[in-house]
Length: 177
Image (cartoon, rainbow, N blue to C red; front, side, top):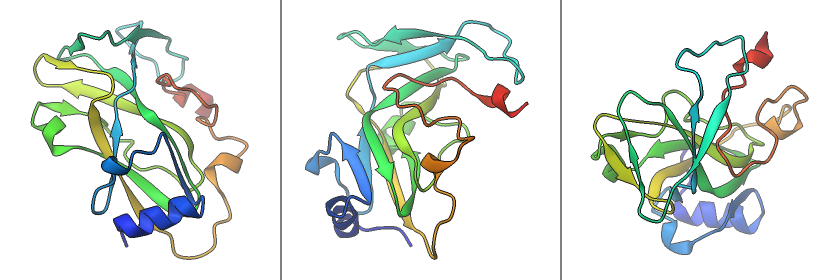
C-alpha cells in the first residue's frame, strides 16, 4: 500500500518519516518531490573496477547550471536529508525530468527501512541538458511495511551507506569482496 499525502504527514508528525528541509508545496497526492543538490560527482577513471575503490571528482553546480553530457555517469545528490523508520521509500524520476531525457537512477530506486541519509542519484542523459541545483529531480513514494522489522538499515554493522554526506557517494561494491 502506498502512503497518501495525509499518511505521509502523519508519519512526519510521528517522526517515522523525516525530510529536511520539508517543504509543504513539495508534497503531492501520494509522493514527496525531492530536489537536486549542488554537488555532482564523476568517476576519475574511464574503466571502473567492481573490486576496487573507484575515486570520484566533485563538481559544484554553478548558478548558471551545469550541462550533463551523454555517455557520462554523474552521481548527484538530493537537497533533502531523509529518514524512514516504518515504510519503504522508493525514489522515482519526475515525468518532466524524464521528458528531458534524464534518468536519475539505473538500479537503486528502493531504499530500506532505517535508511537515514541524502539520496545519491545515478544520473545519465540521452542528449546534452542543463540542470540546476534546487530543481525538482525526483519523487519519494512510501510503501507501508507489514509486520515487525528486525534488521533496520541504519543499525546494520555492514551497511555501506550509513555515513551522512550531502555529497554524492560513490559505489562501495568493493566492500563486498
